[in-house]
Figure (cartoon, each protein chain N blue to C red):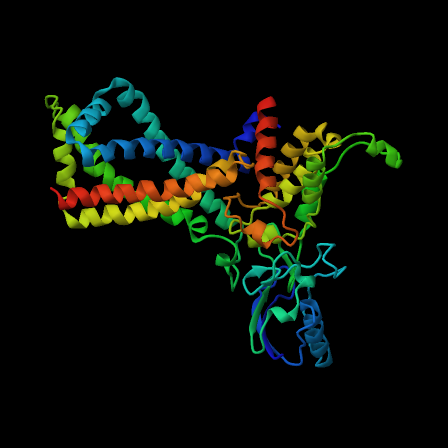
Length: 248
Length: 221
């Protein structure tokens, strides 16, 4: 495949960035998108240029490290996959591909396509946990009966990998899908209910403090989420928040 | 968390937008019901309009609440849009918003501002003359004047066209707003699919009905 890449290059957080065009040849459709960028970077290094910086780690769709806004969509044109699971067969020979970092005031660019997503960590620290020490005996957890339906929905929410695609694809840069997934995974389980009110209040307060926008229910986050986190979680978080607020 | 910070939170603002929107939807439904009587029975339309225009509860309680609701919804919408835009100071060079969301959901501010501009015209057409009639000129009560005043407004083809275009934009606003309001207040369950259908039906039937009423009076005056 022969491609034209238009990639956001930015030397550091304070530098002004711009789109730089790179022609690229010899790409196979079975390559992953990140492997395609590896090929580009090998070529750049051979020429003595700086390689394009981008986030990646497990390359198995689990860690949530990879990001990239590809041709106007978070994680590119495929559905239910992060960028590391996106393959070049989704593109055609001769295509021009725009590659940009996830954009949000709360996700400042560090370099090229790498953004600082530590705002998510701070939200998680504000309440995304259960303050109970477990003994490690599996019988303890199994002693608390949980309806299958609740367990499944909690698990679905817990599959959020915190990649930030929801923020990147939301026209308002809202982080509600991420926060609602983290609130839901605990709120649905008996172990999480004890601190449910404090958790939702503190996590939402931190989310707002980080400078994310307000959710207007466009649903773009759900469509672009590589793990298919449902908008149902946002409705649940709204209920949890209102209920916690009214209780004072 | 203190109650004061509740009012500043993104979820509280979203719920406030939703509740004011649902209130305006209720108002729109009753407005549509009253206007539709003008097509079938001028006398009924006159009777209801006279009641709405002279009942103290409607005039001094419901009408002020409605006006406050409209002002709140629009100011809040504009403030939120400003905040949301500032949450992404550097825009994407290439953005394919249509891949994941509807035009109506992404452009509520545009459809909302058109509806706001339309409401200024609508108030100028009907509410201001009504206030002048009753409280400035203090003319005698006339239960039969409303239907004639309504028809008179739709003689002008340009005004009729502006009304019709505004109703199309209202339809787009409702297309997203109706269902979005329920999601915002936390309503997302097994009944949501049916509710969505109701929302889409409302977003089509009511504005199209208003267009029909405007055209009916334009061609039948």
